[in-house]
Length: 268
Image (cartoon, helix red, strand yellow):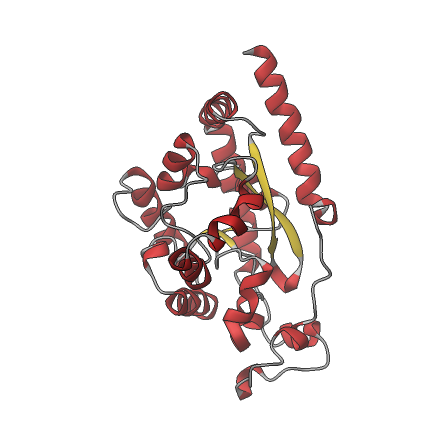
């Protein structure tokens, strides 16, 4: 067990290095400017594109409470990491001993102002999951359509037994507290998305990426994967336009209920 704990600590260090340097992730790609990403969509007047993505994002200035929000993020993440350390170590050991592969999985996501970062999770799939995905989708037209629609598979055979539990309870996302401390994510915010999802947001992408993505948010407490993708985009956009510290607090309270009483909240 001592050896396993040492391995886990070593993996945490490695994951932190990946999160801070997303260029070291597998198959990194240069992120196109927001002008190229939404060139196929005709933006509304309120989202008219300027010459650079930075100029576009200046149209969405930080709110007055942004400083308080960031301070709250740091305090929340540090406190939860301190209190939840025994649980995090226990989950790490379960992942390590129940399936072959690393404890953590780091995936490139798109953060505030189109900055890429390594989003950290407990590994919930088999180590060759990415390689198996293409063969899996090619084997079934229904699965291919489901993945194209939701960017996920509800009954994914690549998920490990402990991974299914972690996903249902959302405990697989606990390591993202490190992303919060690094300033890449917030406790509450829009969904952290992968590059392939950008086009699905259309002209709303610039506004959504004017804030940090969240560990939790309206999507996570409103049905998650049971919602249509269009509804996900609407929830992210509504949050960015209307969020306050009070709304963040209420979302955190609802998140606690989703984690403790998952039932069928769309988490898989």
